[in-house]
Image (cartoon, rainbow, N blue to C red; front, side):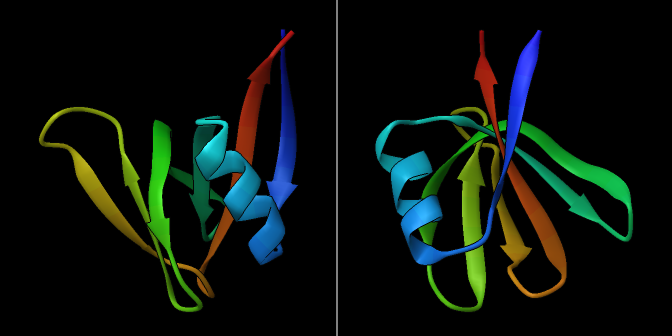
Length: 71
């Protein structure tokens, strides 16, 4: 069973990035990315990586971000 926590503030994103929590991203109520970790973020963009060459850019205002923690 996994726990999900919504990432809203810069502190939330910083903690998820430093602790390398897995990420789930929703856009328009659809999952657009799952399983990657945050490698960089700013006010407009969140960059996640799920593999060596799998880097994804997400618009921070248009998406919802959740960290995935395993129990």
